[in-house]
Image (tube, rainbow, N blue to C red):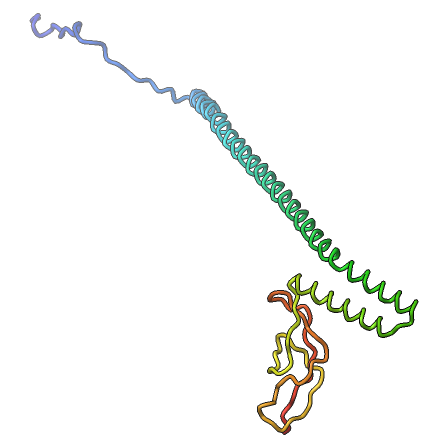
Length: 204
């Protein structure tokens, strides 16, 4: 036999071949599924914890907003109450100042009434009433209250109250105030009391 043909090749200097073995047995597959599930469970708490932290942070911010709103609302309530008290105090001072000016007029009226009863002098009583009336009108004028002139002008529905009418043949007199039945008053640009008037009306 020829030695050259029967000699096998020498592979001693070659690295051994690598083999990958995949265990397809059902229990091996179950083990891999369990490991994957456990890995997912390990990741799940981390995600839930992140959501919980975000929810806590949002809840904290919401509570801060609510607290800030309540604080601001309380400040506004205190400001309104303080402003209301200041307005009430200012109004009380104005009333007190007005009453202080009216009391002397009341005293004079009482003195005139007492004098008329004790003396029976009606003329003196009449003069005293006129003086008190003049004093009262002056006091109203000082407070900015003035009568509304009405005689000799056209009817003004903003200040006048028509109580009576009188016929006229003159077209120019139609709607003219011919008589003041009761005086009216205004304070600056505010109407306190309308003038009660008699107005001329053109005959049909």
